[in-house]
Image 1 (cartoon, rainbow, N blue to C red):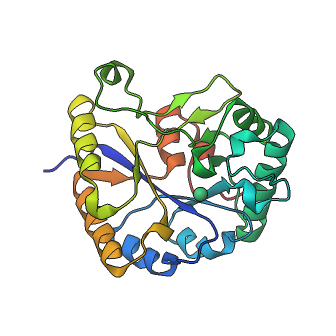
Image 2: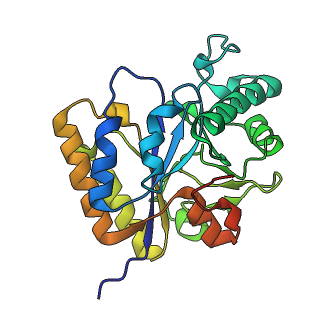
Length: 245
Ligand SMILES: [Zn+2]
């Protein structure tokens, strides 16, 4: 019998974009029998509603250029504490109102996060941030630190779920498979957080390659939402999906 120990956290960042493959994704994920997490900006959060029925977790995503506070910088970390707080709060409230859910996890657009962001998240009652990217995996010191795992930040109850790999193009992702092999060899029940922008799937060919990749991943591991993984590691049932009130 095959053991399914590796945990894949498939996360989709969704924001306004001219390319929209979202409507075709639920069918693919249903067929593969996988769940994941969507980080979506407030105003367009209605578009991800079909994912709720599939057990996906919908969470907050903030890009400054979609807010009145926009001052020319696309990086959230360039803004003051009060501006960051206002933007994140607006996105959170819009998502919760549009979809009738509670959001307690966050990802910054462009993964632009700093201490001010984390403090704003704590102030707004968030429990999870997933705005950091593991800068290395193949270095020796990674073996002892195991940086792919979620960890407690020293800010309120916040837990960081780092992104292990940013999928640019499902076709040319040799790095992904190398990382998975490396991590799996060190820790058989590791968490591997994958970031994908649906709007980067600009052709049918790319979409089909994503389908192949998902099926291949589902043969070697189990897919979880970010909240479910954190709950299983830190025993906080309030983090599990669906995050209904
Ligand atoms: Zn984004």
